Image 1 (cartoon, rainbow, N blue to C red):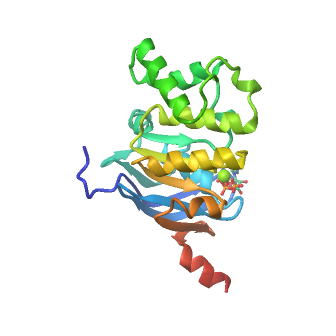
Image 2: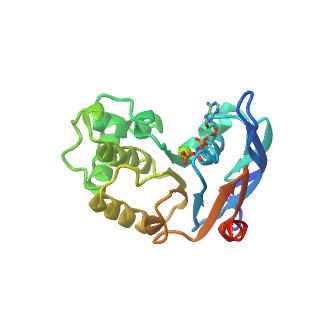
Length: 229
Ligand SMILES: Nc1ncnc2c1ncn2[C@@H]1O[C@H](COP(=O)(O)OP(=O)(O)OP(=O)(O)O)[C@@H](O)[C@H]1O
Ligand SMILES: [Mg+2]
């Protein structure tokens, strides 16, 4: 276990460019501590999703370090270990849902972590219930509405009981009722979170620190307002 004052996630001098493109992330330095809910904002195309994908190793940076729970992650084995502890909610639910039914999709993570089939079913049903998705277990995932898919992907992340949650635009496609339900679920969770969202009304009720991604740099939100004024 990391020391209690140690960052859960630490990013050091991270730099990333897509092939044949200018750098989208430049010298990113960031630490996430226990109890924090960090909201990252930034224009479309600023690199927010890219940053989350780099943290969980879906993309690999040539320059910079990702340190999760005290361990530098470079190899796929190290990132696999990280992904068991850092849950990412994808911006597009269709990138996250890949099993025929809702229950199979939610069970996939716990089974992967080594839980028995019975335990995985119990954990999955409890998580679905906590999100107001009771009765959804045998629904066909690709037939769900956008908002339903969003809540099911959240269930598939929360069922893993990750130490850190990374949510890429979690309120997309949610109606007001579902948004409120999500808000209450997140407010009650003890985990540290990184939340990417353009929904100020939603994030104001969760945030402990606001950051802004601008021209490849991750800055405190205040600096953005000064730059704009
Ligand atoms: N596979 C790729 N190859 C080349 N360029 C890419 C690729 N994926 C993303 N980009 C570009 O990188 C930049 C950052 O994309 P990213 O998806 O991280 O932005 P974002 O801040 O999440 O935007 P949004 O608010 O629209 O979700 C964009 O200009 C995008 O077009
Ligand atoms: Mg994005």
